[in-house]
Figure (cartoon, rainbow, N blue to C red):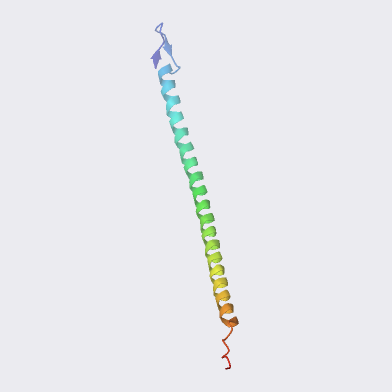
Length: 89
């Protein structure tokens, strides 16, 4: 129990105590907010990671299609080559 300035007992906590209590409460709330923000940031990072995997898959598929087109074009060129006919003299 504390005494007020005039010396009478006071049941109210001192202003210093209330300030420390408020500061402590703010620290707890700030810590909870940081933890919540971290969890949200990790979910966003995970989502971006999955999107990048999809892009890599699409690029790999596009590369495979391009390779097949080139091979098909080369095979077509090879089939359509004209064989030289021997000349008659």
